[in-house]
Image 1 (cartoon, rainbow, N blue to C red):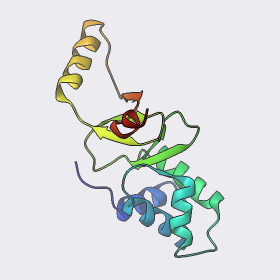
Image 2: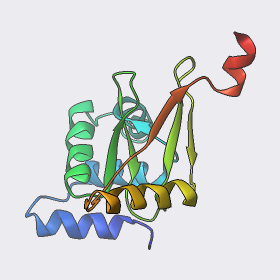
Image 3: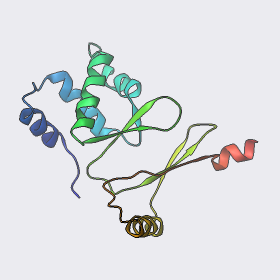
Length: 145
């Protein structure tokens, strides 16, 4: 799987007949440079460090566009805040979410993936996508309780 880059996004924007603006490009570049799971507010703060005129509404619209294009995954980990991660250029992974501090740990497990495939096959089900999120306490929060 190749990494998502700004050219891929710009090509998608042109194909949809949308305008490629300087602000939209800045938001996309900043998102692609981010690691982990970024909220719109966090992304907006990073973008505003370069251009204070970018509105939070423009960031929301751009992230919605990236999600609709399948270039970003919108995730809600139970705290009411949507976070985004790049959808292209990354291997499939699942998440452990700490319900105390909000820490998100990504993990991959081939055995779990195989078991999911077996369950789907047993039920005559064709999986087109999935996500697994496990909620609990991280190591540090367990020590504090």
